[in-house]
Length: 207
Ligand SMILES: O=c1[nH]c(=O)c2ncn([C@@H]3O[C@H](COP(=O)(O)OP(=O)(O)OP(=O)(O)O)[C@@H](O)[C@H]3O)c2[nH]1
Ligand SMILES: [Mg+2]
Image (tube, rainbow, N blue to C red):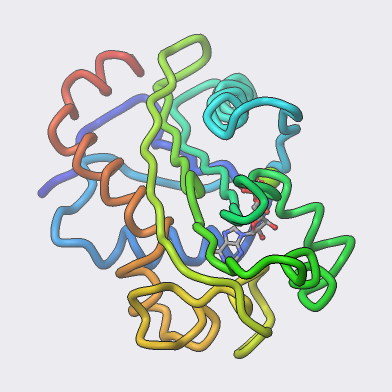
């Protein structure tokens, strides 16, 4: 499919190089090609606190569109423990930075239930420009929290064992295998399908 012309490409705004790497792989590998060019910009956007995952993701995308002055996509990842009623959720980044994997896992020491979900992280968000509607695409993967196994170069991948992985943590899986069942892969597939089906609407909003 040839790309549609827009005044500017869609900019994926993130401060996280590992997310960007996976997003590029996922977009390059799907059956449907995106109808628009996608570039990226490294900006660490401020994130709301004390709000729902969806409110945090929408506000982040709204700020990204103002920053870029054009069409943007963003994502916000949560890691939610069922025993902790969804926490750390969108605050996982700060928990992981302060505690590290071992102490993070100790949060669950007093609970039988080690299950968790990587949710709303994708919340992938898409916005045609400043002040335009922010659309949200929710990808979720269920799994459980285990002792860290596998490479430690991306966040909580070593401690998250998806239910569908045959016993491997995200960190132990190949990139292709992770992307096929990950929160990110699923949310991005929803975003891709929406853009393919609504290319005209989106191009008009961005004009
Ligand atoms: O092991 C992981 N596997 C993943 O698939 C994954 N996706 C995100 N994360 C981590 O979870 C927090 C989300 O916070 P987050 O969504 O605000 O991201 P971020 O601040 O790093 O980037 P961004 O907000 O600029 O896009 C950050 O610590 C990310 O490193 C992951 N860790
Ligand atoms: Mg962030």
